Image 1 (cartoon, one colour):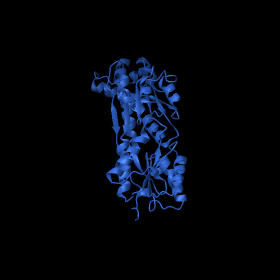
Image 2: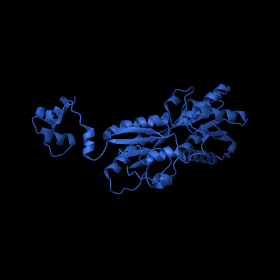
Image 3: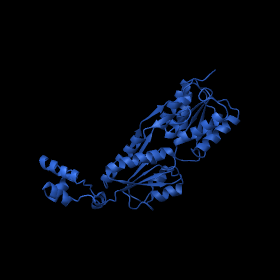
Image 4: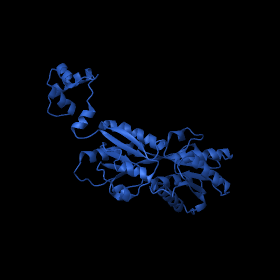
Length: 340
């Protein structure tokens, strides 16, 4: 069992209040006393009771993370970063999955299963901006992804338009002119796919390449099977293509599997690129070129916003939109220059 404050006080030869002041970071403790208390804390391996501290402050020490798909490598990696950084705030992270279903998102947003949490971080797929601002639960909320609640809530995301344009420019610089886009999702209201498509079209226009609707393919989900199915449709249509930009790495892995199975050389015949920089893409053959969002920066920014909201209950703070960095990871799936 961890030592308590009284045991630490006895070891250091000070009062329990002095030990409490050192643990709490109270400034008015003499340096030599602080050093003696810290030595006793270390020797006895004292661990503060986070639950008791939160309860004294009227808080639970729990925050909720609401994601569309826990099984998604992107979201699972992001959740890992959030869990790691939550420890710095002595928070415990509770993860809930919605499947992108609006009713499920509404249930969790309204606090049906989150009455005891101090705040929520949510990546909504099904709810509109108006839906996100109508909620009886007063727990602070930070949004991830493209749905920004009309600028009324804290929101952390990368610039999907810029990121997609960067990747499309990379393909064009490699000599590609017939670039397909796999991943449009008109059935969702979150706007991520629409912004990635906007960046794709923007880069084509800059290069003087006409947009061809036959090269833009819808998908139901961002999974490997959907990427494979879209790639089959594209190849079976007979449409000429020399590159494929997929709106997720999972889509790209499915497309890559079909392309190689059809005898195409990647990247000599067909360049394939994705989005998210998930671990699987680094070990594909060839390794997958992708947009790499700074997941750690997204997690840190979201938790910083949440901590400030929790610490300023009752005091108005302006809503913030934080744009996290991204960069291209250029790998073997796009390395070769296209032929004539």
